[in-house]
Image 1 (cartoon, protein in one colour):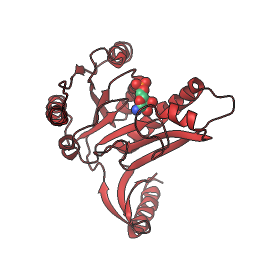
Image 2 (cartoon, rainbow, N blue to C red; image 1 turned 45 degrees about the vertical axis):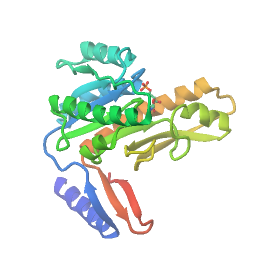
Image 3 (cartoon, helix red, strand yellow; image 1 turned 135 degrees about the horizontal axis):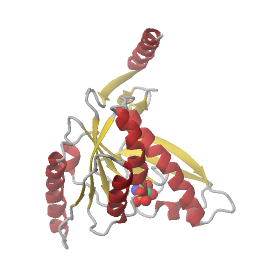
Length: 258
Ligand code: GRF
């Protein structure tokens, strides 16, 4: 039965490869995926991810390594510690890593570059490397410098509360609500140097109903986020996600091969 399944999967993959040139099978490693979570605020997505970790950990899929916040008073840090106390035998460490204050454009660029290298060093301390790691931005409010992105190619993912490319940037739920659109949603995407412009991995739509308020919409969005993000991490950890050159659209796209 297992053999049959493997043969079937190979046929599907072979057909898929003929039509799409696979650029990057994302994670060709045998050890568990080393996960770091970057946060700045409330941390509900982080909690949703941490809650699934136990299940994933048992299957040897992932190893939660560290939660890093750029804000000292982020509620996410408290949540991580609470979650750890109540659920895990082996605590997930937390780190507060601030960015240097800057005023001019040049100072800002320098601060972001310096931060990139501090972040790389911090991740390496917790054994999150380009070879074994996945970095999940869960409400992380800094735009990462290219030095960091280039260090972890296709290893940094973000969750955004809209159907990108619609409503990028801050306040996406509010913007979608006020715009009058009837459908919005959630996107998980790779992070590139732009603002929510990286390759889209997975999206899920959310209806905006007549009786919705901004608050009820926010609740609906968060509910979807908390299911979608852990799901994508699981698919990444089980090697289901690939970046391919789609010959029809003549562009890179992400495929999830289930
Ligand atoms: C989420 O809506 C996420 O999509 C966005 O920031 C928000 C973070 O919420 N990037 P939380 O901190 O995970 O509760």
